[in-house]
Length: 296
Image (cartoon, rainbow, N blue to C red; front, side):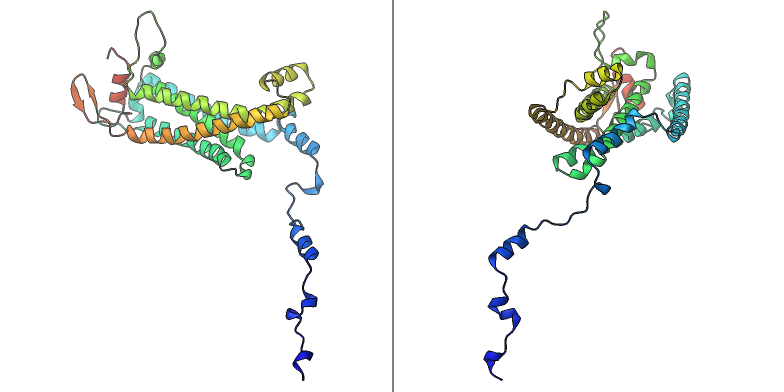
């Protein structure tokens, strides 16, 4: 058999695809799974999501609220018992510095850091899937910081003097001791809470404007319009919104690492009480309670 009679289709120039066919094959879009099934439009999505706020709460929500409110009431009872009895109920005494209060304080700060890490850092990394969990993560940060803010005030022992933790002007010219770790906790928690609230509230502005436009009563329209800050959805609004949200995300990330480093750096500090050197953790009860008030 002659070699010219043997034709391999792999080496046949007539069977090679032409240039237009290759361009058409390259430009063919990839088949993607739709994010929303049944070809729902944006109007249906807006109504479905806004209905969570506009419709009455379901029965299961009230059951869960009753259970959690009961647990919170028991926590208030325990705080009242601790205030009336003393900080010794937490296991605090002179040699013991790491008791239930400071460990719980650091625990709630860690929970707040987790929410900041999820929301802010994923936004800086441009992860699109964060939009499904960012609101819950930011709300977790806010409630965790609120829970953590309880312990510096109660850790003073004399809670009726906890307002001395803040540099409030008064006619006695009494100021807090800024070398006290307890005062550092107040400034750290207040700054962290302020940044978290601004980051959370800035992300809510477009949604508040949507609820304002869908409001059916004058009171709801006024309140949602007030918190929406005049949002109209223009290009200028979106440009300023994206810039502000990016700056707050970067500030939250910066504060996350700063606060973590601060808690690590304050551990080996040494404090003296009335001229007597003591080796104790800066967040222990003797060091903090005696250092927060200048007359002690």
